[in-house]
Length: 247
Image (cartoon, rainbow, N blue to C red):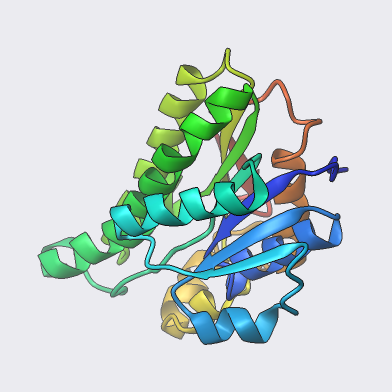
């Protein structure tokens, strides 16, 4: 599916969850992949360290200057960036009503979920513009479309990701760059495993298929979205919800 001919991808949140399986999917397709995560030990444990095909970069993606430096490091090492997949995400404190959400928690969730994707795309897009080609995928959530009660910070941050996707898709549509989002419902990840059981039940009960999505299903869809074959769809939020999404 993916044209692996010298293509270089960048995946954030690559040490676990969606970022991990997407990172491995792209590597298995033959791409060169820069793997970014704050968890250095996790990166080193999950990847073989093939210097020809991988570059492991421990990075706090909420640090804009560090993001710029890391992108420049990737360009220096591999000469290009064709694909960016923003997978970093946290739920923050859940199962609380909006008036109980702390401002500190709200800022932290937005920094990790939204600002990191903004920083990464801001740093990468100029390089894609030079080559008149690029694929960017932001991982959003069904919560960003519908809102999950008890998850104000998470839902709002993912709604912001969807809004940014729509804007960026329009802005670069004539430049050979597609920018899309993926909105999963509940995917079986460590992030979900850490949620209170009642929160997971609330979300799963809304899925007509009555099951969580799998990481493999998410990785396969992501691989198509960032492939050369997906050349006419941009500014779009792809559905991965087992029938839950209505728009």
